[in-house]
Image (cartoon, rainbow, N blue to C red):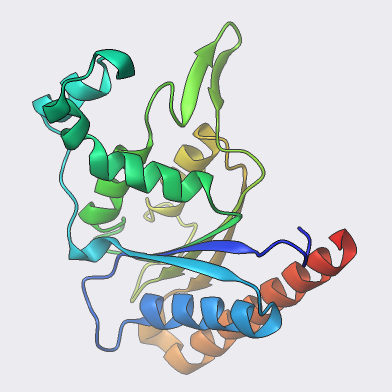
Length: 211
C-alpha cells in the first residue's frame, strides 16, 4: 500500500452497548491510531448495531434474479446489501468489533454477513469449487469477552468469521483480543492496545515500503 494513495479503512462496530463498550473503545483506538500514523487514511464507519434487516423471501428472490431482470422493487430490496458490499470492495483494511454474546457474535453481525456474502458478487463457483472475489484486503477482528476464552472450544465467533471472510476472498485475517475481562480487565486491555500499536506500526512500515 502506497502513501501516495489514501489507505481506505472500513470500521465496523456491532456492540449493543455504547457506554463502556470494550470492543467499540478498541476499534476506535485502532482507527484513530491509523489516522495519526497515516494521515491520508480514509475511514468509512458502519455501526451495524443500529439495525440491519434479516434475509427474507423477498431478498432471496431479488438476489437470485439476474441483475438486468430485477424490478425496481427488487433493486430497492437489495439496495442496502449493495451498499454494504461496495464498502468492502472499496476498502483496504477492515476493522470489525466483535463482542462475544453467549459464546458467539451478536445477531446483527451475522445479519451483516448475510447481506454481503452473495454468490456472483463477493464469491462465485468455479470448476475447482468456490472462490472469493474480495481480493488484496486485510481484516482485523477486535474481539472482547467477559468470560469466554477466544479460540477455545466454546467460542464460536472468530472461527466462523475467519471462514466466511476467507470464503469471500479475505484470507488475511488477524485477531486482536481482550478476552476473559472478568479476570483482569486492565491487563487485558493494555495487551490489546499494545497489539493494536504493533499492527499500526506494521501497516505504516508496509506503506513506506510500497511508496
